[in-house]
Image (tube, rainbow, N blue to C red; front, side):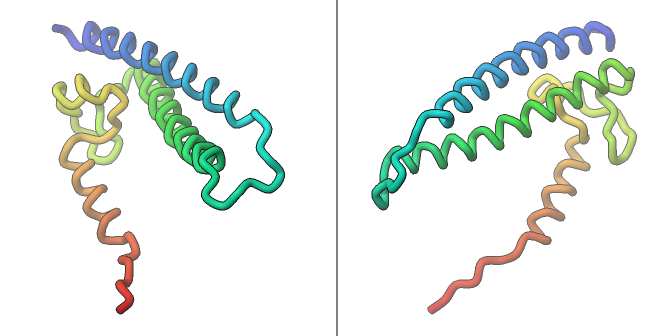
Length: 125
């Protein structure tokens, strides 16, 4: 498979995923538009569901942004190039995660640094 064939295959996957994510976002936003009791009971299932959906919207918006970034990199001609080290992103990684912007090595390093910089929870006795 040539590089341009791979890019077009991945573009199709990304466009399908983008359509799915947009549909989910529309559904969740419509759900959040529904009225809520002025004074919901503590532990109210509807309030919990709304909070869960609001969090899911944030995740899906981030996913949509990642997809758009990958599509733009395809248009620029730099799809599949690690934005950190400049090396080619592994084909296997792009097949699994077509919106990847980092190679496996740089992704692992980024995650390791994020874990190190994340505040540790203190256990109180």
